[in-house]
Image 1 (cartoon, rainbow, N blue to C red):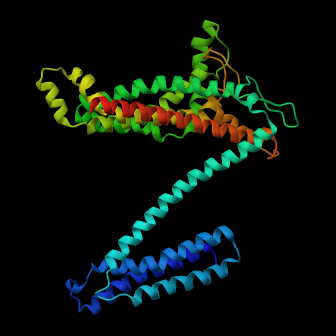
Image 2 (image 1 turned 135 degrees about the vertical axis):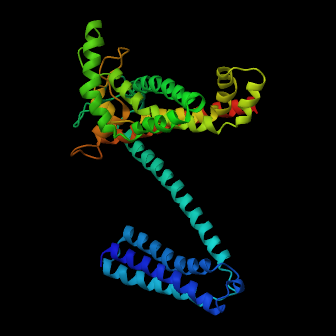
Length: 395
């Protein structure tokens, strides 16, 4: 029996247990719910949880270990579900503290879910650390962190310096943030402080549509439209390059993609600032622009910093726009109309195709991923420091 059918049977038993438990306790109380310790639904949920949750854990563990076939799993799952239902039914009576049991069960289930999230994060970091350690056993860390040439060659003779990739990542992200932060922040200020309700009702959803466009579409837009336009109207006339793939192409298109991340979150944070602060500033004679600059924005700064941090993390981790818009040339330079690449692009390229997983040219992807993780973590630490410092001064 397929696992899907087993899951459906277990869920059906849980639903049946809910209605059986609810009707049974009401029948024992003579139909008067006031004689029950808990609401009737709690008795139903108690039976449903004891029926489904242990069985779902069994199925999850079985799916990982696979000690036998799906038929054995189906039999064991039905036995566990039936045993859980019978145990819960045996305790169902008007005096049973069903609400306490259900709430305790849910609390521990939430704790378990949070621990799974933490364990997943730890597992990701440990896996990168382990494979990065294997990489540095085969390739000198000095050449990796301080090398200025990226030239992987399977079979030997590779030069795996990360500096060109870090430079390309930061350069493209800087241009993207230089586009998205001012436009997004000014749009949020206008929509929250100046726009009429009618304009806001359609302008904000229109901006947020940008966040729903797939990144591959942005990449095609950069490749077909933005890149040739920048080449024909700026790069070639100024003698700065002849390629449509460039840092400026990827940065501009990525900045457009990031506008709703900054705008939508900043708008929500600005709207959350108490109206009493605005009224007080206006009552003291401040103009609307002075109120926005000296009262509203300082009060909303922690949320705005969070929005900018989210946009920065999104820019650093973007891949498709860079592949199609900036090219794959690992080089360092100041010309924004030259092709460059980022860390994420090279992670994909090093893990794509039929390659030897134990080779340093493949393991370098984990070192790149760990470096990217450290950069993002550093952004979080800086943002947290800025927010805490501001709060100490403002509060």
